[in-house]
Amino acid sequence: MRSKSTDRVLIKCGFCAAILVLTVIPVRGHFVRVHAQPGAPAIIVPYTVILEQHHAEANRAIGGDVTITQALRSDGSRVFQTVTHTANPPIVERMIDFSSGKHMTIMDLTKRKSTFFVTSASGIPWLRSSAENCVTPVGAQLEKLIAIENVEGYRAARRVRGILTSWYAIDYGCALIREHWQWDAGDTNDTRLVKLIPGEPSADIFADPADYQELPPSGLYGKATSQMSRADASYYSHQRH
Image (cartoon, rainbow, N blue to C red; front, side, top):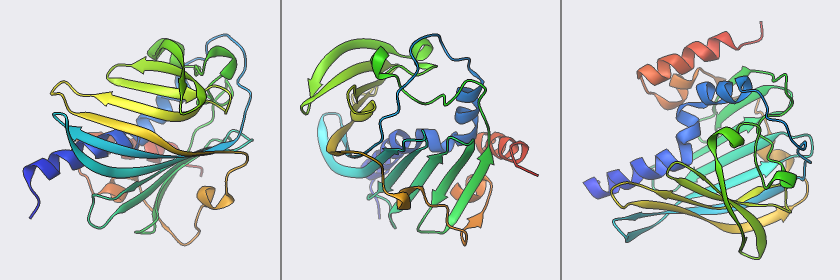
């Protein structure tokens, strides 16, 4: 039987690793609709980065919870994979944004996926610009640049958005190399670099398995909430017929 403390850890770590997942369609749609800010275009530098996320409750370390892999291809397509070790059974999840406008969430262990299509008139809206200290087209509105620092031997832009502080490797495609969530109650989530691999990522992490079951977001997570209802409605309105 799980303790209440363990449940809180799962909730907080799940929120940090999957905050984009639970609002996958509304968030991605928002990024597409916001107009890009003027500035230097992002130069695409492909990479794969592996990180570990750890949770601390009131300054008491709980331990490793989530392994995160992020990758960017030279065509601008990106993937965000999480492996949640504290779940039973573990959860393996991939979110893929293809530069073509195809967007997917894939649950590899249960062989389920959710696919929708949104294109942007302003290019690839998630690309960060190294020339402008890793800002995105919407980052100028939502984030604040705090400093340029040396992190794990990389020149990094430290950017803040609400309770989240992120560090991006300026000279390596603005790969995320550190992250810190600071909760009001004193709990924290820290994401630290394991490995940064320059160059084209493995094709496997971008694979779209043909035999996986296609479902709306609520079918992936089994959640009957108002947020999932909105996500489902957006999913159905962004299909190719």
